[in-house]
Length: 260
Image 1: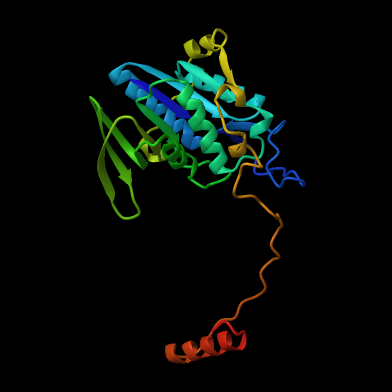
Image 2 (image 1 turned 30 degrees about the horizontal axis):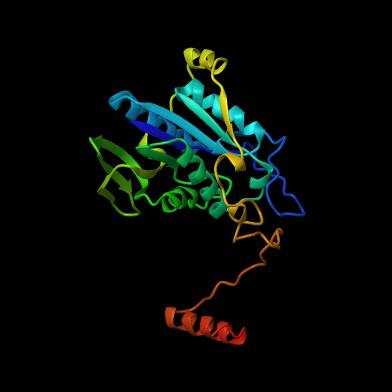
């Protein structure tokens, strides 16, 4: 079974820095970690490999320093790692990011399962995994808490707000996972020794046959126009009296502000 895990290197601190010209995160030189949900995706991939055999390839799009995150996944048990890095990718939104990763995954050859964390803790959009599925024309299952594969069919239990749902899908497919699916393993001593011998494969825009119109800030249909800190909220008002009196007070307040 050939499994690809998409990870993202995210800022380790909440004190993020913003580029005032592009309104995008400054990642170079900022202490970073692997997105926690992506660690769960990697653990799910390693468990599938242990049960069915095969290979786990971890891929990320980011600046050169993202290679450190990829080396950590080698120490955890990944077989190969790929860094998709080019100045052309700078400022990508989720649409451009998913396109770039999908193009890179195509270059890896046949893939049975693509695993992603449900979302990144810096953007919190939960859009990249589904976006990859759309670009590749593959079925997708989100918020997985359990994954079973039998032959060319997968059965996934996914977490919803009130209940869990069990769905099935043919391979290949894209799955995003939640933290409840497992407890990620720690890097092993043997794995850390492998890091020294493992090459981080590099891919640039020219290596993935990407359309330049879909890359980076210029290829992103959504852009941050302005970043600001909202002013502190003023004191509120507690409505008193019987319920029907409070309702009348509320309606009058809304009418005064021309909200209704």
